[in-house]
Amino acid sequence: MGEASTQDKSARTTAQIEADIERTRTQLASTLDELAMRVHPSTISAQMKAKASAVVEEKTAKAYVAASGLLEQVRANFVDEKGQPRKERIIPVAAVGVGIVLLLASRRKRREA
Image (tube, rainbow, N blue to C red; front, side, top):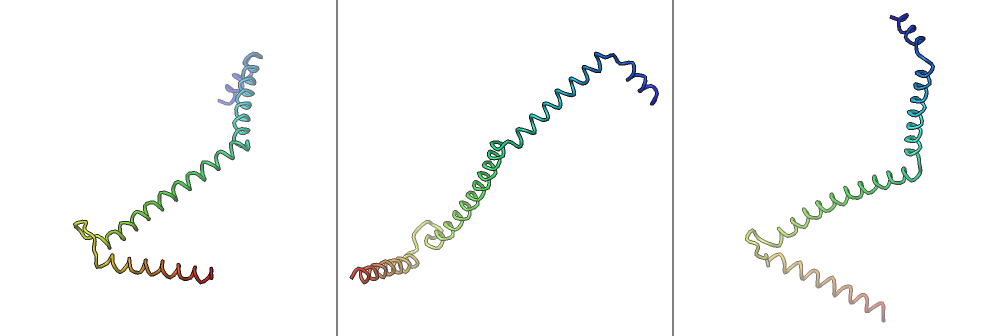
């Protein structure tokens, strides 16, 4: 089998050998062009930008889901199953909010005086 393949190769014409060499050169040139594109700064920059964008999008989606869940939990504390407000929980929270606003306003007046 080794002898037959050696004979086949030796039986090739010069034109066939030149065609093989040209095909190999074309493939090599294509490979080099592809490698040049892969390591080009604009290509690397675009890849990094795409990766960063994907990470930001993923984090934003996770934050949105978490905030939505938290908001639903808070809402459940202030609204009953029928959708009616729970006054026994809303009034104390509102009073605390008003107290904080009044405290901040009084501190601001002291600084200005």
